Image (cartoon, rainbow, N blue to C red; front, top):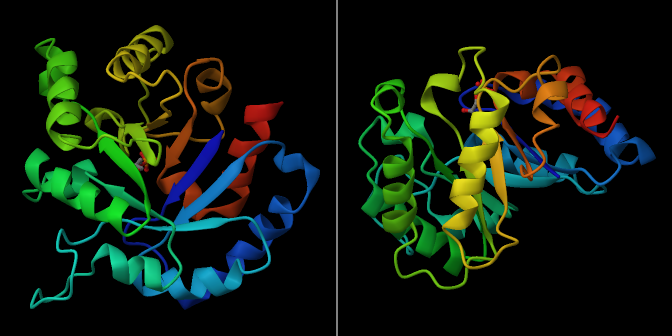
Length: 241
Ligand code: 13P
């Protein structure tokens, strides 16, 4: 199981101390088969990388520019730059970036260049509340997958993160049966039956007991609860208890 901490725009140098607990936990047998990945803001990637040097925790970026090479793009960072400072993963297509104008085509370009830069991709998809109410979830997800992964043959390094927009930061999670069915639907879009699909949206130490029972999910993308090391560790521990 994968446990990915998406810190969004939270954290500064003081946050590094809070990672000691997680490092200790990652070296214990309590971690079981859990794989931990932290996606801090760009400003902290190098510091996290150094902090995690002697443990198995991986680092990812939260987004990237679509250009493969350096260029005049103020404020942007590309995948090679992320790789260069120690990231192995990158989140692409998060709804918080889609909201700011990222479309499926642009996401496709970003994914291609991330793979070229030898990063693993956490590819976010998900429907809005309105789309869900109109019964358009499957249609939306199909389009996001089709265009987002257009002309990408080798998908072993792509993790799908199903994040319904209405579940992000709201404390609401999908009904277990709905979530199982949606993850099954997403997996049915792939020839490779081992395609990994993660769930994200309000995952916390309370609802993990319910979420872990949904047995086709391969891990979790965790926002708010991941800023707190104790909560993050609790989520991992409870998944295996
Ligand atoms: P929350 O866990 O804060 O709902 O955020 C989920 C998310 O967007 C992870 O990418």
